[in-house]
Each structure stands twice: as structure tokens, then as C-alpha cells.
Length: 117
Image (tube, rainbow, N blue to C red):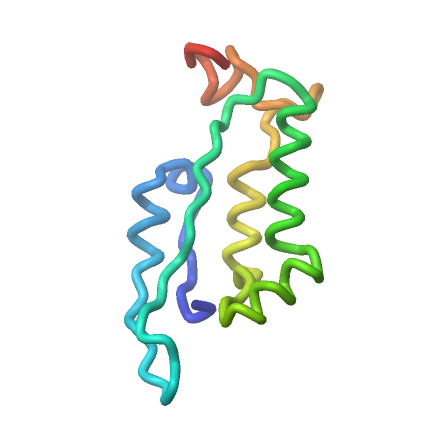
């Protein structure tokens, strides 16, 4: 999976179709390798209405991608952690856009006019 190099900029990173197009990988050909490869996507709402909601999402992502115990579980099940080049793009995607509050709040940036945000 580390052979897939994401190519995003600030305008293309926000489109989920751009992510899925870049995640296509051939099945592995290494002897005894599992014959299917692919990425797992988590779909989160991007307009956070409160700091605790935003913090909870970041805590979950940190546990899933960076925690040593989680990495051991992944490896025990023959999975691997997200390559750092992809993790860097994920962080850029979910990072806050409002420097005053740290939130993607309704009425700001891409959250403008989003119902329920």
C-alpha cells in the first residue's frame, strides 16, 4: 500500500472521489500473500459543532493510526498501518480551519450552509 502515492492539493483533497481514485491497488503477487488488497475508508462529518465532538474524532483517529497496541493488533491480523504519506494527507484533511476555535464550524469555510452543523 505504501506504493500508492497520494497527489492532492488544497482544492482536490476535499473531494472523496479523488481519494478513491488514488487508492486503487493491484492484488499482491508475493508468494503466500493474501490475494486481495485495498484501503479502508472512515466517513466522518466534517463540520463540527463542538470542541468535544472534534476532539473525539481526533482521539479515535490517533488510536486507530498511531497507537502501538493498535498497530500490534493490525499486524497480528495480517493488516498494516496506514503509510505515513497517506496519514499526512488525512491530517491535512481533518485539521481545523478556524484558527480561533480549532473547529470546522457551521457558517465557516466548507461548513457554510450545512444543515445540522
